Image (cartoon, rainbow over all chains, first blue to last red; front, side):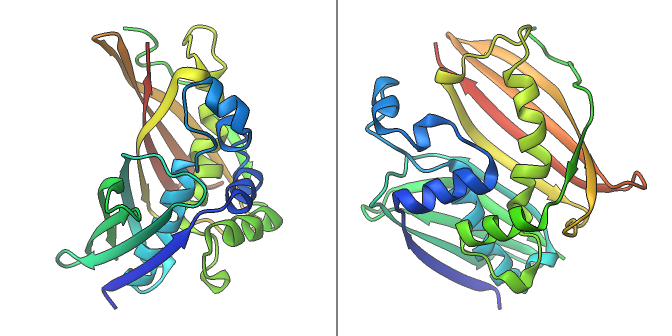
Length: 118
Length: 127
């Protein structure tokens, strides 16, 4: 398979679960009042949570996580709880994938995303 | 300038099976697929970035920090129960128009010294 797609609606629970599992307890991901105090609209999802989901989609397109050799993305847009993001992977030549993450308004959450696999 | 070229002491990281399970659940990975590739956020970037953020010489204001991009390259993916070693280094530290751009690379190796993963993060510190 060289094409895969997954649509995820982010929740506070998923963001908190990622904070716990990853050890990234930055309060911008957990505490709405703190997030607003540093100029954010509220809690935002970890960029690395988005990249984690992107990695799952890339792994599926690559024929298994063991085959993934490189993953890159730029964190381009904030993702808040309630946002729905579609992550997709498409064939971009032998051993290469072109990846994207687009929110419910059609705006990119991640840009320049790509992967390589064996 | 800044802390460009600075290398931090190597850190051992145990790939804890319970933590892998929690991570698999949080990102919605296939549990049959082993340690998710992006678990490198924990065993590579995750154990070394705090050294940079907590370095008084680096003077990074955490409240103004943005993770701008991220790359991982793997030679292989670690197994649950394995201990790997990660070492972070500041590749570049550039200030432009009040913004500071810090490229931080982490090299993760296995107990026998063979390569596992290379992480490269770009951090932007807003004025």
